[in-house]
Length: 148
Image (cartoon, rainbow, N blue to C red):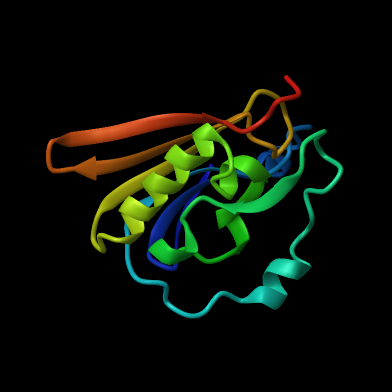
């Protein structure tokens, strides 16, 4: 496991290939304090990032563990995410986006995102998203895969 800082957040990355494992290298968690986006979204980088197309029966997006509006950028921050969840088009997606907005709209708020895997791929089965509120830690789990 590799722990590192990237653009104001801390990441935990599983470098399984370093030990010869069959499992994919993958980001496991990110945490930090929200902040304003450091720069405009880099559309060309995101377009060039490997597409998750064809990995599921349902459409996927290039999701972000730390939302761009909360200071997130690219690289290890990105993962294959269910499109309806990422864009807020489903019931769970509405809740997911509301948490992302809450985190982004209150700079300095502690948050975390944990990707939960059910196999050796880098396609998470679920996402835990948490935010520290004045009354305590609020965490919700969101289903990300529907092929399991």
